[in-house]
Every structure is written in structure tokens, then in C-alpha cells.
Length: 382
Image (cartoon, rainbow, N blue to C red):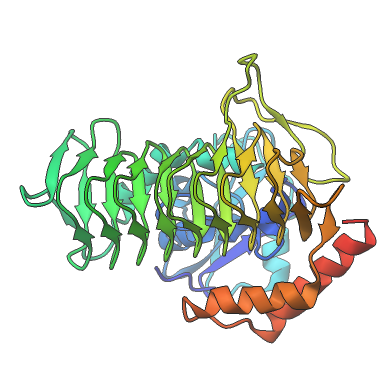
């Protein structure tokens, strides 16, 4: 997708709470279905104008039909979008965003991401919106062939011609669409339940169960049971084990037999902490699992309790469940009484080794940000 900055200006603010997921990216780059939040907004931006949009806007349809000079605000006065002349300067953008709206301008309902669960619980609606407005280029709407397995349901099944689906697979599109992107592979005996997205270059292991409302980003390796979950990209969970109602960053490796809980024994609302210096957050959800930051490594048999947040760069290799908030760059093993810090040079060595396997380099800017995060985490006792 063309996320041309010349025709789209994203308005970032200090709102929202995403924990480690925004350590190495802005909230607009978080995956929400086929694409990121920003990519979805770029796809709807007018080619002959400058579209200004809230950087966490999930209801991308708000951009449709914007007239020249028009602004749209939510009922509570939150800025959503505006259409300005092509090449509008910073002053014009600020004026469009900050000038108080009229009653006519503030009559719109819209979803704005305030936390990871706002994104994951909307996957089905997000996917429907994307397929209606901008279906993936080249993908073919079709049922599975007899040599691939069986498919059923009335929602679209879109498979890129370069993707591979092994024998004896089952695609259930009775409650949502299923998209298999360019170069993806679904190995034999896998079950995919829509709404479900398998991103470019991703491999789904044999006998995998991809449950509803799951979006796996590009170049992942996934298997076992996954449901209600987003993988940002470039992460591995190839083996058996359960992961439900979660958001996983990039360059994560989840060991065989690892499981998470996404439901309290009391069946009550899940309350989480995304930051050590932040308060408890009410999710408003009965089902919520984990936030797993970039470069997290979980050893085989790791068990995560309901509402766990794992900070960027943490390494967990212990037989007991870790605390529900694991600090950034923590090093947890059975031989340690508490979290120790992953040494930054050793961490970067590991990161380079993993990223090179997918032909991605650690850039100087990326390394600088890692070192900045590590220094802050260790200064805080992480």
C-alpha cells in the first residue's frame, strides 16, 4: 500500500496506552488487520489533497467523502480528520486540528485505539472494512481445491496465487473472511477460522489452529492454537501451545509448549498494568491475554497468567509463571531470585542473529533506540 506522506498527515498525541508495543514504533504503525493503522488511513486519503487524520483512528471510513475544507470531530470533540489543499503547511494543519469544532463538525462516531485490546477485538470489523474498500492486490477469491482440503462459509476466502495451501486443511469462513497473503504457506492439516489474516511470507505449521479474529503479520512462523491475537510481524510461535487474545510485537520467539491464560477463574473483567510506573487499566473485557513486546524470548513450557505484559527485550526461562508485568530487558531464570538485566551488548548480538535470518539489518538508529530503552530500564531497576 502507498502510505504517501505528501497526501496524508497523521496527528500524533500523547493519548493511548500501548506499553512496550510502542517502544520501537508509533501507534500508527501498529497492525490492526491486513495493514497498520496508518496504512489503512493512507489508502483512503484523497490523491489531490492533504488529508489530516488522527494517528490512532481505527474507523478509517471517516475519511471517505471528505469535502475540500471539511473537518470531522467525534461527539466528544476529539479531532478525527480534515481535508486541506495539497501541500498544506504546518500552520494550516494545526489550525484544522486545534480550532474548536462547530456543532455540525462534531457529529461523528468513530473508534480510536486507546489500548492494544481496542485493536484486537475489532479485527473482524477492520478486515471487513479493508476488503470492501481496498482488497489485497492479486488475491483470488476462491474455495479450497480438493487437493488442499475443505472450505465452507459465505464470507470471502482470498488466496494470493503465490501462496501455498497443503492438503487436508480446513478453512471456516462462516463468521468472517480469510486472507492468505503473497508467499504465505499453510502446511497440511491446519484449521483456519475467519476472520483471519495470514501475512506475506508467513508459514503456518502442520496441525495449527488459527481461531477467529487472528491477524498474523509478515514473515512469521506460527503453529499450535492462536486466537483473537495480532502478530506485528517477524515473530515465531511454531510449536504447540496456546496463545489467546494477545498482541505480539516483532522478533519474538515463543518456545514449544508455551501457554497463556486469557480468562480469569472468576470470569471477571481483566485489569492490566502496561507500565511499571503506570496505574492499573480496566480492559472492559472478560477475555484478555498478553502484551508481548519486541524481541521477547520465551523458553519452552512458559506459562503466562491472564493480563500479563512482557517488556521489550525480556528473556524468560523459568518453570514458574512470571509476574504479570515483566520489566524491559529482564532476564528471568529459575536460578535468579528476581529479574536481572539482559546485558545490552549480548542483547544486540542476539537481535542481529535473529534479524539476519530474515535478511533484516540492525540500523544505527534502531540500535540507538535499543540502547536508550535499555539505559532507561536499567536506571529504573529493570
